[in-house]
Length: 214
Length: 214
Image 1: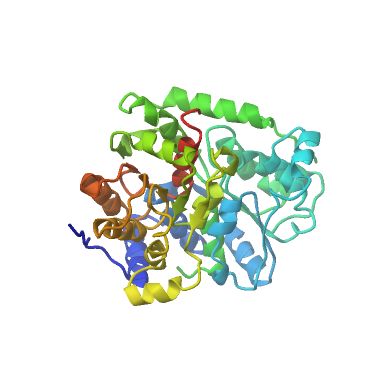
Image 2: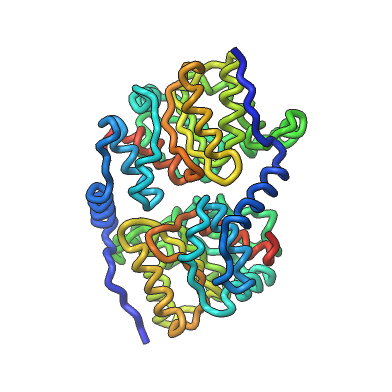
């Protein structure tokens, strides 16, 4: 017995059919045009057109993120999976993609600060955070910790892409981002609810990297 | 202004609260006990208890996967994101985790075989595939290609964890896995529909690695 399945094998054809299908099923009318590419890529990552309803943002956030990438600012993220979901060849200016989670000293710092490693790893973002694109794709504690540090006077990133996922703290951290971004003076794009994750966070970065192409 | 948010910072407390919440919201009654830990970890990754309804499996698949890991067999996967979602310290026997996608020669092989890089990368699995745990977390074409090769006489993996995601081919590839696994002689665990992805595929591996603890 030798099986031969009937499926599309050409990568460009798969890519095009995929995004065509997403466009057909996704209602983008509530989003400004600057967020369309990002919404479509996030829908692609989630395989779910309905999550468009959960996207929230501040005015100019997508533009701020695109500009930051074009000017060569780094991407800071809380998770190695986000690092590996970002398409390097799309990044417009050889931007660094930095995840500090596994750096030396993080476990000890987590103990000293009495928090998670993901939050402690944010401490190491300070030298890069000014004007950077921050993509949180896993840990609510990382997002909370970053907002606290910014409120204490840290330099501000260009945009926070808030996509933590999960049952404890994720929805709350994204609600807090939307509620406090204005007083923090940081543009944001987020996905409310428990849903999120590294694939969606990486998709958001890839969309901003593509400068609004799809 | 200095913000201080009220959230759980203790990683063990977050972990426990998370899995407690999942247990409360997830109806596991349709699953055999050997799949409970896997289902709970997949729900955790997806942040969605309802996807339990989409899990499909063949008898003994979870046991076959656990045994393969305990005996030191490698994990083969189609995506770097899966590699980075697998918790190495959970793996019971220093198991290798192998993703061939970025190996030399894959782009050329994709052209020669007239298929995607993900499918071409499966060609390089042959030396490791016998008795291995295969976790497909991204590309339908990788899953289709593997099934074709097995049908042509390749050695069989211990189990296929089928979690491709997306709008084109994902649901079809998982339907084909469930329909043809018996004739291929390979146990499987999959998640029907378009949903899936590297986080869920890694969660499935982590569950089997944990030997059914949660």
